[in-house]
Length: 211
Image (tube, rainbow, N blue to C red):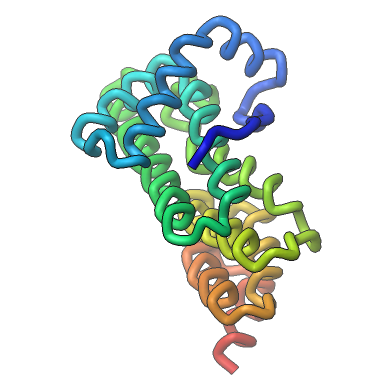
């Protein structure tokens, strides 16, 4: 999948913080994207790529978030590519979760910065990427007309929602997807909702699917 334009995701900092990180570490941001692209294309293995991304993530998780966001843009925009786009989307979800788990280990060893800031155990790369993907899907009550684009957006949200079970916007979007005209999208949405905390909206959707 080719490169696409990436708008700065909201990742626990202001636009100025984001732009400062990008201007101050453009080479490293490009390095993170290159590693990610080579992993997705199969040029390098997980055993080689993951430690490199963990290195970038420890320095500044916004660098990795920028790379993940760009590839998420591509995965949604090129959803009609079929298996390749689906594979890329699933891999992005797994990479974000793996990096979050690694950050948690660092935090337990006292290696992270202040809580709540990028680089700390409280910062969730998966949640930040989820916020970005929600923007790509058009927000509440706004969905793409193309079936492949809706399916890819739903799959990304469902995969990332497990790392943010209290994310109200993700829950609302999955509830919306659970009423999609395509059975496969409804099924993916239901699986995502099952990983989120119980709420009246979630329970109603599950009951509706069961009925």
